[in-house]
Amino acid sequence: MPNFLTANDKAGAYPQSYYAATSNKTEPFATLDGDQSCDVVVVGGGFTGLSSALHLAERGYSVVLLEAHRVGWGASGRNGGQVGSGQRREQDDLEKMLGRDDAKKLWDIAEQSKDIVKSLIAKHGIKCDWKPGILHADHRERFVAGTHEYTQKLQTEYGYDAIRTVGRDEIRDMLGSEFYHGGSLDMGAGHLHPLNFAIGIADAARAAGAKIYENATVTGYDSGEKIVVKTDAGHCVTADMMVLGCNGYLDGLEDRVAKRVMPINNFIIATEPLGDDLARDLIRDDVAVADSKFVINYYRLSADNRMLFGGGETYSYHFPKDIKSFVAPYMLEVYPQLKDVKIDYGWGGTLAITMNRMPFFNKVEDRVFTATGYSGHGVALATLAGQIMADAISGTMERFDVMANIKIPSFPGGKALRYPLLVLAMTWYSIRDRL
Image (tube, rainbow, N blue to C red; front, side):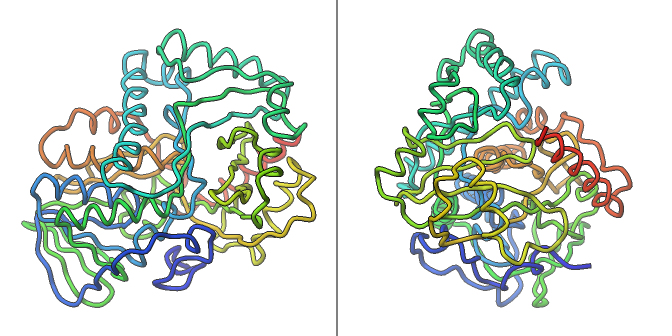
């Protein structure tokens, strides 16, 4: 069976994405050329792992982080860059699942996740094109009333006044498209260049004393008196504690986690620069957009006025051969006026979803912690997860327990049957999107 770490990408190299082409320069990270020992070993150099390494190092722990390719190489450096409010499920759903009190705790944690993104950018001077605002856009008229009702719920019951309703005429003026019928505008949310944000956290973690090693693929670990992590080059890292931050690239490393999360592939294109006038005709206020389709369209303008448009998913190991042609129809459905615009970049990435689309925080063993399965809502929450994991390792379990108490069911059939069952479900939902 193919491995997501190698199925679609060149080893040790970023994909040919707009983000990689505009990434900030940094001093290279070392390769692991011998055995190491430390207090905490972190596996995975995305937002979860990098934030864990940073917050642990700041607390005085000796930290070794192992990344199979480059820091931010996975979904953390390839995603839509949206820093959204709330959890992946709406508060109505969470109240039914967990009760009002625990749903409110999850809302508060989600608010903290946006705050930590903004605070890390400010504290470490991370240049990642932060801009405020996410517009939720309803592609069916019948969805608008529910969106407006939910917006009012957040205002009145959760005291969240950064969000407001948007009607049909306004959204069509804001987006230069007749595809949508209304929605909501959240100015407490925002968007950024995710790879540069990841690189910025990595630089901060290194400055705090964490040792970060790239091109160090972890092949397994043993947990006895000490945790011993093994790499493909034959080197070992011995530690007292471990953080697994692998998300969609976990593969066969830890089956107790893998049975509750499933990798899926998502894709983004970037057009040529559009110029100020056309860019503002498409997204008047330079906010990010996420729509109401089950297989969601998400898009925004880059710092140099390209349309960055994400759409479509696949559930096999392999990316489409022509990602630009795969995603372009989704963009043209919203913006037919872009039919003659050149597409400069097309790339894919692998994220992890769970059955109920809530993240899976778990103490796999007494000294092994994981957070994964962000289901497309991970830029902010994965960053906060690193701080939460640092808290837990330091003995403060409160926020970790709130997240870990969410019941995440295993996929029916476990790892073997996840894919065929998911394909059936997603086919049904994609048909529903067209109705």
